[in-house]
Image 1 (cartoon, rainbow, N blue to C red):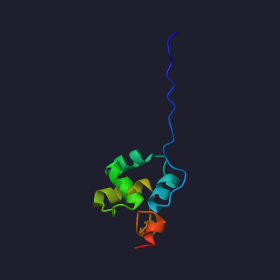
Image 2: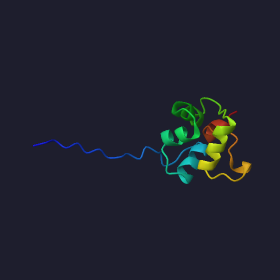
Image 3: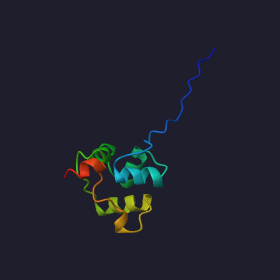
Image 4: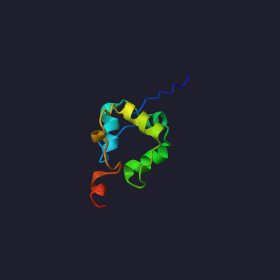
Length: 92
């Protein structure tokens, strides 16, 4: 008998996040972190460092445009001041 391998697509997206930018990604797109990062022109690991609060986000104008389009951001007021976790932002 041939052995069948079932591969189920996992939803790799967390259901909630302390990062405002990650919350926007989850709420406004159906993209995984990897898909979102690629479409924004950002290395996945860099994006993960931003949302973890390890490094500060420094985007190019092209990356900002892509991110704003994907997240359907219409106003600069919708962009968080910090991409890291909320509890870490308040410590700075």
